[in-house]
Image 1 (tube, rainbow over the protein chains, first blue to last red):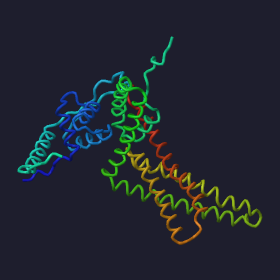
Image 2: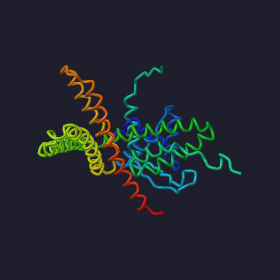
Image 3: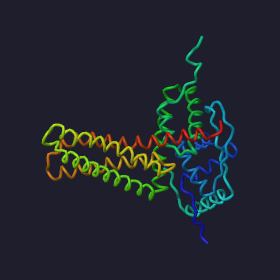
Image 4: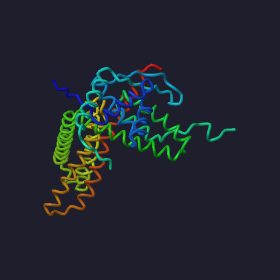
Length: 108
Length: 216
């Protein structure tokens, strides 16, 4: 049977950021982690749109933290990768590995 | 003694307001909180000017994502709303124009007061169209539920696109178009703004209702 639920590029990156951050994953840290590691500016809207999509697919779950003064009394929304999300990451990683096997990728 | 540092610097109000309008309700609190947290850090590190520019960049990119996201997630809803909205505006405008002209003709206004006839057969009709657009914007936003601003933005862009198609058609026919264009551009822009205002009213009402229902 073929697994068809491969992740898109940004979905893949966001899930990897969540895995790296484990229990510290919320909007700010996810956005900064992606910016630092991919060296590209990411908008908070793009992060939330992707997280929302991943949550609908069942790859991510979220819960609210406590409101803090530095956030103007607004609560953080923390994200965790589910078992399905982890499988999707593995599936996508394996597909990419198979696709690049034997290729001599020249670094420009 | 008070100093400027007693009140922490706040992000641009207009940007915050736009985020309130365009972000989905369930994400608004988190997005505004996240942006404020980073904004405060940037103010301390790079200064207020840099932080404000960053906040605006984030706002505009977030709005763009919100609009594109809806187009991708619900293209059918968007198409139906836009087609129904444009049809409603066209129908209501034509109906009100006919009704006004029938009323003016039946009372013999043209014969008795030609200037008044010219005024009533133009200005109020254009104004009426703007009001119709605002009402259609309200209805479209009500129908779109959590995507109010995205739908009315696409609707108003479609209105302007149709106007420019009409302009190209008139130019292609070789008719005198410039004066007509100036007048109609003004009124069509007002109609497009009216549609967005309709959506803004609905969104603000919904945000206020949600605040009223949420626990303190």
